[in-house]
Structures are given as C-alpha cells and as structure tokens.
Image (cartoon, rainbow, N blue to C red; front, side):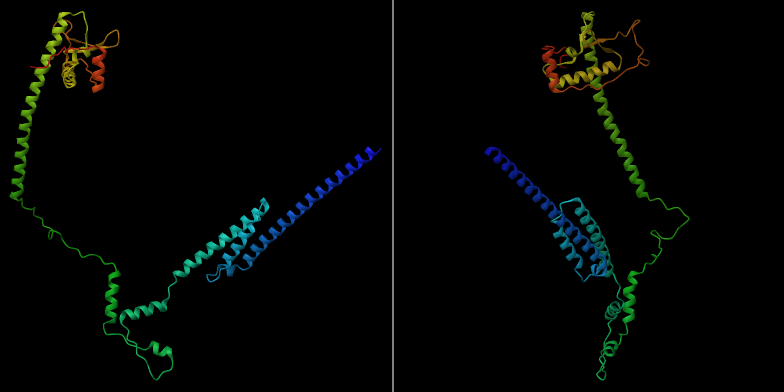
Length: 331
C-alpha cells in the first residue's frame, strides 16, 4: 500500500514538472512574438517618417537620411525571420531611391549658372576702374560706379575671337593651276638610269652563282645515280633499302645532302621509291630504254617533305645496323 502511494505521488510530481516546462516554452514563444511585432512596428514607423519628411530627406543641408539609415542598421540586428527581413528590404529600396534623387539634385546645383558672378568676372577681365562716391551712403551706388578703359571692348573681342571657328584661307601648295604639263627634270632621269644599271648588274652576278651551284648539284646527282644503277645491276632481284642507300653513319650532314640529291633523281624520273612486304621504303632505278620507259612529261609525280632529326638519324643507324655508307663522300 505504501509503495503504491509513493508511485502515485512520483507520477503526480512528474506531471507537474512537465506542465511547468510547457508553460515556460509558451511564455518564451509569446515573448518572441512580442519582440517581432515591435520590430515590425519600428520598421513601418521609419518608412512612414521617410515619406512624411521627404523634403527634409532630400535637402543637401540635412543629414536626416543618414540618421534614418543608422536607426535601421540597429533594427536589423534583431531580424531573424523572413517577415522582418522583407520589411528591411522594402525600407532599403525606399532609402536608395531617396539617395539617388538627392545625388541628382546635388549634381544639378553644382552646374547652375550665376549671371551676376559672370558679369563681375567679365568686368574684372575688361579692367573696370571702380570709383567711390564719398557723398553717397549707399553701398550699391558705390558698387555700380566706375568706368572702363578705352581698350576694354577691344580686349574682350580679341579674347572672344579665339573661340569662334573660321574657315581657313584657301591657297595653293604649288602655285596656281596651269594647263601646261610640268617640265621633266634631267636629274630624275639620271637617277632612273643608275637604278636600271644596278638592277642589270645584280642579276648577272646572281646568275653566275646560280649556274655554278646548279652545275655542282647536277654533277653530284649524276654521281649518286651512277652508284644506284651499279648496285642494282649487281643484283637486280635484291631490293635496295632507301635508308641503307642514303644514310651515312659517320655524318648527319652528308645524310641530309644525300636525301636532297636523291630527291632530284626521283623528281626527274630516273628512280622510284616503293614499299616492300615489311612496309619499308626501297629504291630502284627506272630503265630509260625499252618497254618500261616512262614519259617524263605525262607521268604524274608527287613530292613530300621529309623530316629527319639528329636523334632519328642515330636511331636509324642503330636499328638497321649501318656501318659503312653506300654513297661514299665526293673526293
């Protein structure tokens, strides 16, 4: 019986504690709602005040707009919900419009033309000599009295003349127009003759150099063609590897020269390059007599640019195991 009574008391005590906690939460929510309502009320008062005191807000001599913005910054510290944030955004839009309008008015005030000040500056520039009237007690009368020098208006006209656009005076660069053609000067003709003589002398020198170089190239091409025909005649059934034929394992420069000279042999139709069963290039001479003769004018020819670096040259020498050149250097 005792234990049952104590259990009932503990249950009643727990129910009382739960009711007290629920009442405390409700009081906190009611207090929070009260603060939010008060915050919204202050925002509405600020916006209403800005609309009622619009003229004071736009005045350049008043800091009313700045003070209102400072108050809104303090109110924003308590904003935590979307409803109050929407009121703050609405306030900022209204304040921004007023600030823009106030800035436009300040800019307009800076460009106002003051005719009285302009007249005073103009008279000072013209050299107005002011005379004081000792018998007059009026300051305005003494301010207006005075006389201008004799050259005052001339001075003003000279200064104003600089700002008027005028049409430039028309004149001839080489005198008036004439119907007769200008007489040719002998000096110009002599200069032309000298230029012609120089242009004639230069091609003659270049032609000699070109002929000498072409003659040396032709001799080297004929020499290499002779080696190709000799190797082919020794064993017509054995294909000649293009790399074995042009590569000089002892000189990269000689290899480049051999490829250059072989290109003339291919171009003129004395030899051809094709691929063997391993897809490697081989070279063979073309017979110039008999049924296999090819018409050099009608036979289509194709030319390609070959790229060969020093590293590639070394790799080819190592891969194909080239020890001696098939084209010996010229003696």
